[in-house]
Amino acid sequence: MALAARHKLPVMYPLREFAEKHDLVDGYRQMGVYAGRIFKGEKPADLPVVQPAKFEFVINLKTARALGLTIPPSLFTTADEVIE
Image (cartoon, rainbow, N blue to C red; front, top):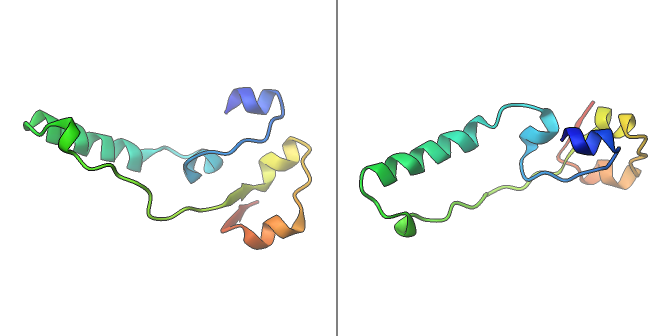
């Protein structure tokens, strides 16, 4: 994130927490659940692949302004959330 900001590059992230700069607690919790199952004897190959059930389009307007980006109005109407 710091490298992209330093070079003023817009980026896409797989999780909204990157846009919000929050901890990735849920992802770490899920990794812990999987690790626990493996330690209890389950084979990693037998564990299901967890895929997101919901995709969100979040615009961090503060970061966009800092990068000197102009966000087209059409993106605001399709965004799930705009962070001011």
